[in-house]
Amino acid sequence: MEGSDRLARLVLRGPGFLRKAAASQASDPVERWMLRQPRRVRDSYVREVIDRGGDERLAEIWMLRQPNAVRDSYVKEVLEPKLPALRNQGRAKKRL
Image (cartoon, rainbow, N blue to C red; front, side, top):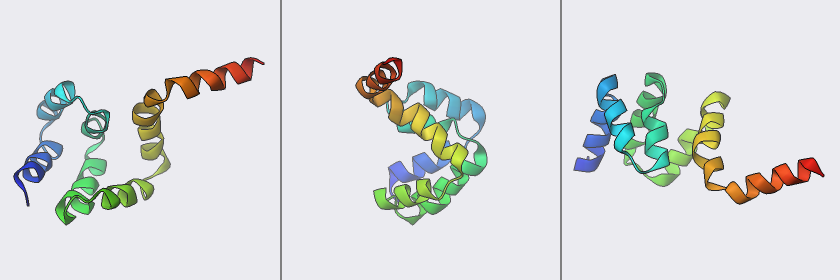
């Protein structure tokens, strides 16, 4: 396990104060989102993605297997904010 994987593992499984501090400093929306997830979600990510090498495909498989609430929060907190033009277009269409 690489040093960065080891650090990610420790932070994701660490106490609340550590995760909150890390989330407040994270510039990546995905990292902030993950650090705010419940322990069971973070633990499953560590077990199914980080401990198995951290490949992006493993992360995608992991996400697709999550409950609707987890996937919905990812869409709302990570993906939708990156699409302001599309979100505004959708609102304009609804008004028409």
